[in-house]
Length: 327
Image (cartoon, rainbow, N blue to C red):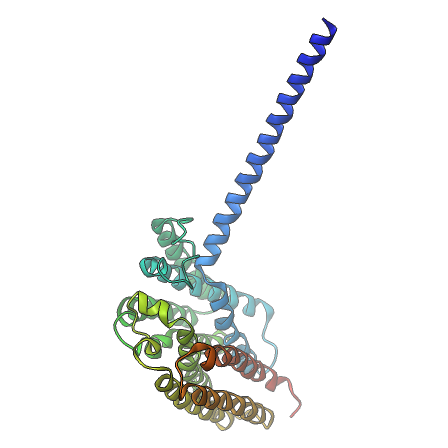
């Protein structure tokens, strides 16, 4: 009898242990699902893209302020800008979900994986748009809020819905939306527009085609599969490289125009010349590699893509540092 009771107790303990294990696993699964969903919503905002946008906002604030701007103003501008760009990116994901499912580069996004429904993503994007406008309007100024809203609307309605699937010049004109942060950084401090931020706006405008076409060369088969007429899809690598070189020269020339227009002192033009010189060397090397081959392993477009990120980062960091120098 005692043995039977012991066996029964052991069985009960084993059942309890199994139940506890199932509960623990269920809790872990539930927490994992919550984290996956939260990560998916953050992914809809495309944080890597936002990083570059903010990189062209904050340095302009330093230059406009001619020193270190108030921390509260910077934080409000960064928060509002992040939410505004995140809104545009989320709504872009909703509209492009059909082609994102077919592209290797984008099929791991939240909507193609069905982690978030299109309806939820749409609401998320619209809420971000409203909140970002209010944050910028009340904590920064309404000019900055209006510019951010205009940039988001242009990105969604002009680039995403009209240009992207219809013309090889899609990112040339569609890239205008990504130039607005330079203006917003200035207006956040001054509540007005002037020529210096317009020049920086144009630097980003002419930087966008080389940057994006280099990436599109890498993923041209993806774009061809979904009938998006990116320039590398409809032109050979050599023709694309020639266009990249032309825009690179105009970009460098525009970056140097910032020197006399903004009265930067000697440091900025020196840095701009060095950075621009390296960019042009990379563009020429790309053209040379593409002259006799379309093979990506030969052309190596990602070399220029990665350098383009570094170029823009260092150029705008220099813009931020210049007012702090005793020259």
